[in-house]
Amino acid sequence: MCSDNASGGLEAVDNGRRRLLVAASSAMAAIGLTAVAVPFIRSMDPSLRAKSAGASVKVDIAKLEYGQQVTIEWRGKPVWILRRSEEMLRMMEEPEHRKQLRDPDSKVYTQQPLYAQNAYRSIDAEYLVVIGICTHLGCVPNFRPEVAPEDLGAEWIGGYFCPCHGSRYDLAGRVYRGVPAPTNLVVPPYHFHTATLVEVGVDYEDAMQGGKG
Image (cartoon, rainbow, N blue to C red):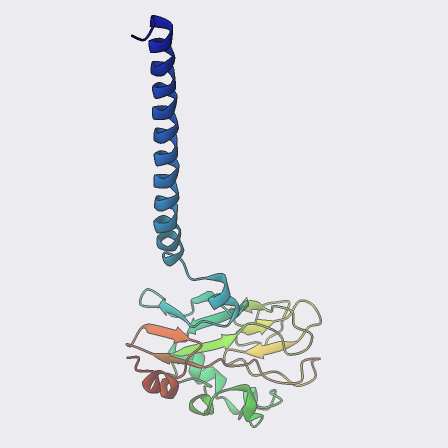
């Protein structure tokens, strides 16, 4: 027969084994949960690799009012979406205003897709979609929609003013004469899924080829 000491020793060993098995099982369960949870959590947000590669960005502009602008990020750059009123569009086409512009008809066509090579540099005249980076040295201009402010002069009809070196652009992103910036602001590829859902980074033809709506 085993002695009491021997029996107590076996119980201690058994208890130790049970604790070890429980700890091992818990550890394996934790590893399993982590393996499942990490891909799930990652799937909730766009990957950094996709962002750096220039993944497209969708934005709903249904609540954007006339004269208002929203800024989104695409490829690490600010992209402005401005809703223009009929009065804004009218002032941009005034002959006296056009004379102040370096490239009023966007003849430097590489700055925008074919579908934006028109008077308003846009698919829909009501909405301007443009990269908000000055074409001089890469500063971000200020949005100045007010007409004839004291610091910009009586001929200012609204637009963008670069605080770094004084370059000016109108509400179609067209550069003024006599400023450091050599060309108009760049229009990125984009298209409308609906009247107010814009996707920046993919133009209409590429979207159709890729099976997107």
